[in-house]
Image 1 (cartoon, rainbow, N blue to C red):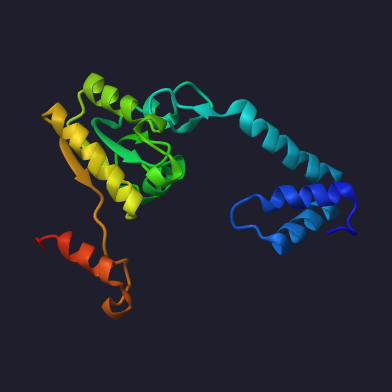
Image 2 (tube, rainbow, N blue to C red):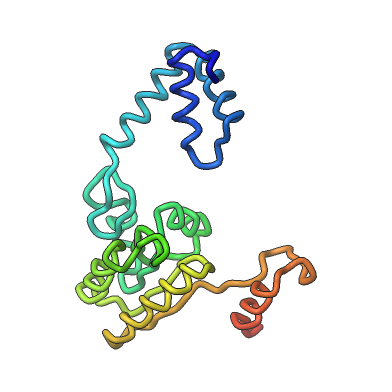
Length: 202
C-alpha cells in the first residue's frame, strides 16, 4: 500500500470501507477504475454524487425516492389497508421481486439492539403507529429478520399494534428454503418450519 501513489491509496482505502470489499478486492477495483479511462471514472463519480443530491426518503414510508413520495406510495392500485414493515429499503426490493404483495410498506430504518444502543426512538416506530391510525390499516405484516434483534423488534411492534385494537398483526413465514433437504437444515429453521406449517388445500 505504501508504494502506491497517494490518489490510488486514497481510492483503495475508500473502497475497503464498502461492505464485503477486502484489501485485495479494493486494489483490483481501484486498478480497474484507473485503467478504464477518465470518462468512465467521471461517470462513476457523477453517479455517486447524484446519489446523495437526488435521492431522499419517501415522506410516507421511508423508502428511497426522487420525489416526496416513492413510486409504490404513489401507486393508487396498491392495497392501502395492508402495511408490510421492513428493516430497510433493500428488504422492500426483495419483497417486490416476488410480485406477491400488493399493499404498502413501512421502512423502520433498523432493529432494536440494546447492545448497540438502538432503541425505539432511533427507529421509525412513531411514524408507523401514526400511519396505521391515519390510514386505517387493517393488517400489519412484520417482515423483520429471523434474528434475536429482529424477533425482539417484531414482538415490540406487535404489542404496540395490538394495543391500538382492530389490527391484524402477522409475520412472514419462516422455514425451509425451496429445494432444501431436512438433514441440512439447522434446528431453529426446522422448528420455525413446523410452527409455520400450512394446510394443503385442493
